[in-house]
Image 1 (tube, rainbow, N blue to C red):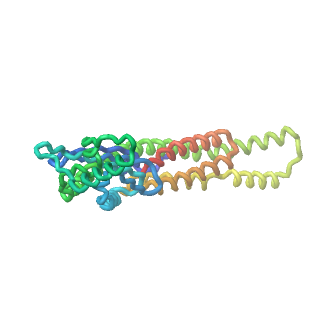
Image 2: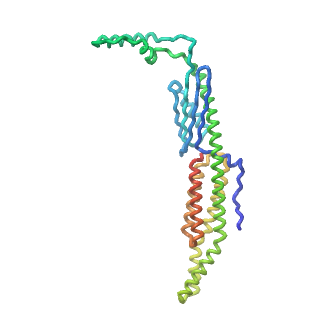
Image 3: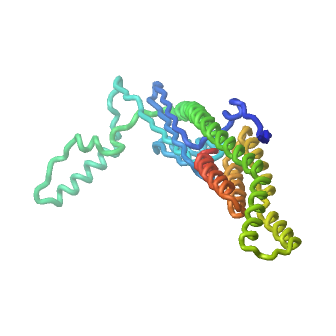
Length: 303
């Protein structure tokens, strides 16, 4: 049995992987009201930040994007900010006199043109936007608290990404181990397969009782052996698997690199199958492609 030179993984190395799928929610209540950040992150080829927030806090959107861009590298990230102002009950209602007067005059003009004018309802006037003045907010403090809360939400989001990434890394590593075993098995069986094919061809010629030029037969056997030779494909599969293992241990965004390696592994597995002259090699090629597809599905989630 050939010994695999596949590098060993430590649990710490696996934890470096980050998923792109995660959710985080944080909330804080202050004297001015309650702020809530909800962050949702899903797969995306690039970093796509979507901000949803109240209009009175819209001036903070640029800062939000800047903070997220510094902390994350890939994924579609929805940033939802909710703000519920604290109700002030110890002060009276402050009415916008100018706006109220304009509304009453407008209502009276309309009533003058109606055959059956209606009475002006004071409650409806008060419900008009801007009539009751909102208490002034300390938006500087709100913006500062919002940014601090956003960083807390990002910490939680990144922790969730890392936990899921660690699980994905373990699943990918187990598929890598299975692929390495298949590659080693095919490499071990290769001389036996070639010899078996040679004996089968010789026996078939003897059955036909054909007069065979031994030198020509040897040339054909050498040609077939070269055509069936998959050492190069096995070497490249070995190299790609070792590179995959090394990439999984990097503390950086590795999703695109892993996606490229999946393409290369799939290419070599297909070539192995096309060169196969034995059912066991064909089966090995199919098993490799199944494992590669399973890894590819998981790679789609990695940052």
